[in-house]
Image (cartoon, rainbow, N blue to C red; front, top):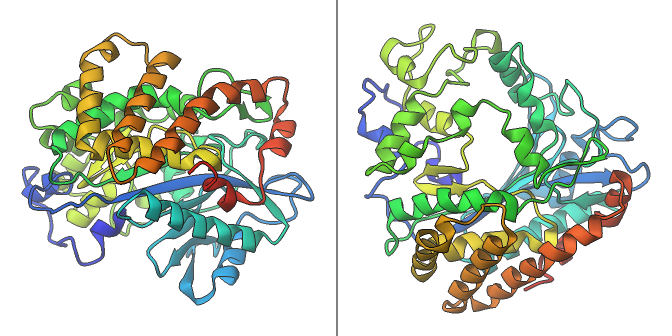
Length: 439
């Protein structure tokens, strides 16, 4: 969904004041005419069928970049492969339709869709992307969509030696808490806020619902070859990482002007990237906030609005407003249920009746509900399904209902399995077919 911030769309002039209106407009701009578009970013893991290992994992036959290479060959001229300039590793595969494959630190594959007008179009794009994965795998790989890598050993180095890891290594030194990115897979839904929906009400609801969706959409039962404890191993790992850039204070969410309050919070978060400075010249954690960069500069550099939008993309809250809303509080789901998460957020954020129903629940029984209570999750999923039934996308209520049943079945399916047995049972060579099965 970064298509909103295309090259040339954001002025490059230096920001001279923390009250520059462009800072707030990058989060919420009333003049920005939003439609009802929806997009999704999915992360998943590949396993070699011969070895049972992921490419790049100890004992594997292929490097982690092999899959992007194979995808580039499979897709052909519609794809452009970008490599890390420092290492030459394949990093990103840009598609002419605007979609993008990329590699995460632990070798996880990510596909980021384009903004689409509705759930059918999102599912069609994801299906096409996963079919490319099936073709590129050519019988060599199977795929798993799970919130954590089940068998990757705890390690201090990344599977993928990308430049981003080097930046994080410097920023967090001497700690290694950023290395959670080696093991986690998330599902992020990106939504416009359409004209008939209040932006602040929708964004606040995103934060309130996220408290429940961490457990509702938990799907990370195995980590480092062992059964994980708690509802979400992915959440437990990510909770360790730099709370200053992850946890939005309650006072910000409750502020009369959320966009301005979020802007002020983001200004006081430390900066990861500063212009084109080399890695060894970048600031460390605690050294430079964006506010200080505006007011004092840093090593001869000063920020512009492009630097601000980049900074916003390095924040890790459950909800990240960037004109559209990024909803980040969900583990990766089995391919069969990816669209249930997308449909849930669309129903309770973009559909006015769904947003109103969610507000009534939060002001009523939800105010006292335990965020990990399956009964609360069931109630919210039921609200989302009912909201969709009143729209042209009524058929997608079935995806949410299927997910309600799956939540019960999943725990029973994990009983007695070790990590390797789970991988053998849960991987698929046909993720595209699985994605459309519940619709």
